Length: 160
Image 1: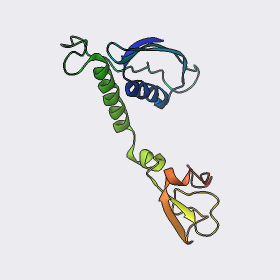
Image 2: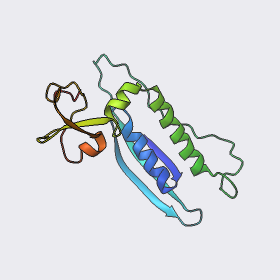
Image 3: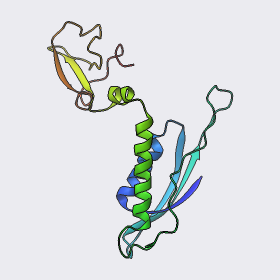
């Protein structure tokens, strides 16, 4: 799949984050970006491959690429919101909708702001389940997953 785009630097980072946040396998084969000094946006083309394995119980679902509204009043960003900003807003909206459909338990259990527990005195791994057999009934230091994973690997027993 080839995509042409005009975007701010932040918009490009959001696009790449959106592509790699998808559960299905994909690969960016190449990206060609130039800076347009006249409008201040990056102009580019992205080459991407999507993968699907036949013979599995997973159904094929076509790739979702957020649509860009047509009929924009101010296409060249002379006043108000330009095309790149509209694309950025569409990607942000799609990411929010995608995140809203995921189970809140899964997000809480895997997010960097989720609680993590370190066994006091001899922590070698961090735990996400307070009832893990290795820390149950023991004194622990509480932190977040984001902070804990900077220094420790995740416990295999409670790392579902």
